[in-house]
Length: 347
Image: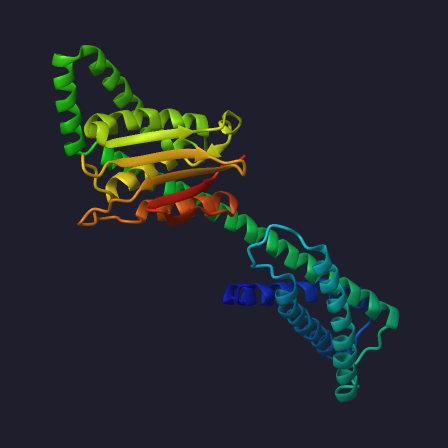
């Protein structure tokens, strides 16, 4: 659906119509002014006629901008150029100029014959062609400027999403409660199993480093994301022991494909946050790929009695990232007591 016409477009059309009307008539009016010897009466006639011709061309130009807003749709979000629309727009514009020019200049001649200065028919057709062409070019430039601004806004929006995602993830991972549990676990492991403590410390360091660097790239390889998941899930597994499990089935051919950084962390965290994890109800999570370049993250459903704050925010942010990155979206569904999220792998 086309965007509605805006006040900014109307104001821009008025200014461009004024510039075009001056451009179209400047040469002929200047030559006539320089080459003619005017009496006072002839000078008045010349200036009134010039003002009328500029007004007529201004009106025609503005009408063309209005018509072509609905044909070329310069404010519509569409990066592809439809040349059929441009050809149609020029044909309609040229026809409209010929028609409007004929009748408006005929009205001028009928009502103000004393100030009318006869023009060559060929000159009129040339100017009509030029007028239609210039309006089409101006609208094309408006379209390019709009698309460029939209791309910049999308990039800025993506940066904001990345910063928000980084902040949310970092807030969860370095909260006092998280650090207290991590350090307590590390202290216990140092006394009981120094080798595991060293491994735990390495994974914790990897998680924090990856999170801090998450906003530096718009996309990361699936291979890098899975390495991060390995460290992240190691910390989670130590907390819930046998009550949580992660199964991966990843095609090696898809490891070079891209995903937004921390995408899998959002999905794992979503599963952990909204489900009970206990000996009675263990949480089973799987990460698999498909032949259609899609990553599927699913988990068993054992909903908590009390929902935690922020439900759905992570998935909504991830969905917005995908729409900005590649005009694609994630898919969310429930089936057979499983919560399933499908995210596209980007080339």
